[in-house]
Image (cartoon, rainbow, N blue to C red; front, side, top):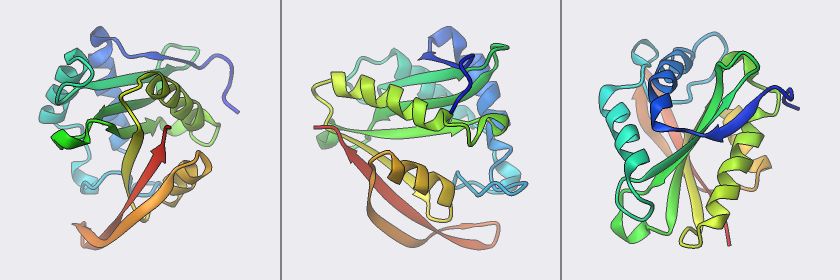
Length: 183
């Protein structure tokens, strides 16, 4: 269970620089030191790119229902440092406005303490209040077994897998698609 000093709250636009610094640090763990690859990026190029920073910032300012919208939550530890994050964003397909995409991460020293489940609950609670949203979708590397187990334990179901979707650092990696029905 997570320690009581960790708090989860909606991300405010003024917190984006701290979030982006956290994301760069978080991505440095991608496939290193016993951590599975959790992003389809080379281990040597695992940073949060400028175009994704711009999309993230623009999405927070975009009203729900419009293309490109995004909502995010961050968890802060007792010292005020970002311990984890979760975001929901519009799917790129216009006819899929009733579905959202999920992204999430937990900082290395806060993993395996229940924080990811609490982040999921915060995002799920928000999505349940938005009556236009019916599904939360996510994609993860098939080799990310801890992530897969987390999502299965929180009600997500596997809807498909694509073998050899990516070739990263000389390794063929599959992609797993999962979803959670809200209604």
